[in-house]
Length: 203
Figure 1 (cartoon, rainbow, N blue to C red):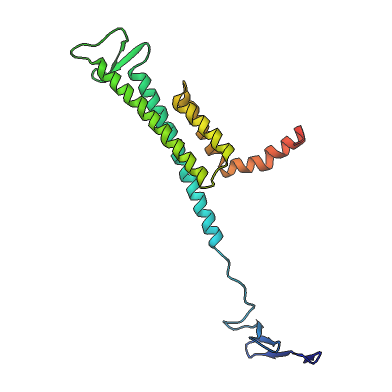
Figure 2 (cartoon, one colour; figure 1 turned 90 degrees about the horizontal axis):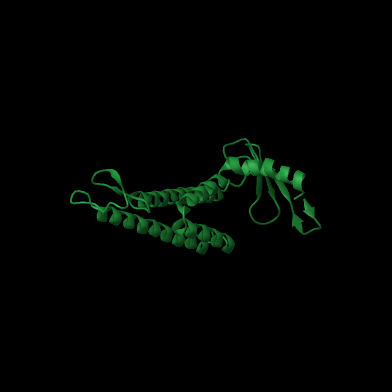
């Protein structure tokens, strides 16, 4: 079959039911067929995107576990610091006994040891806070968070490290952030909270 005298079209049916259409140049287009090689040729599904998404999710989960773990370690260091030496009492690791701050120890009980442990735990907590600050900045450099989120995260991290009772605020913050990344929370937010907010408050 010739179209406008320029394009030649020929259709050939093979023995296995395939139909080849030749448009007058290049490879013919093959369709149909019952054999092993027959049937319309479909592109193979691209699994690269799925692999990238799985890798990103795995990395996010690891970051969440690390952040929550660091928050708990910071809280333990802070609690230990206060346990071994505070404004009212100090704890002897030698006797496993708490004494009044007025008691300065004896040849059997060293207050200096408890003070040293308390100081060590204090600096361990600050070291955890410094490491977390560096990790947050690295996430910002990698494009995993924006400048505003970085500022908020660093402010919370700073207070968690140096503020009174901050370590417990840090635990609450990290647990809340971990919950916000779960599928059930995202589903609740998209399907329940946003529609309710729109109906109740108009936005």
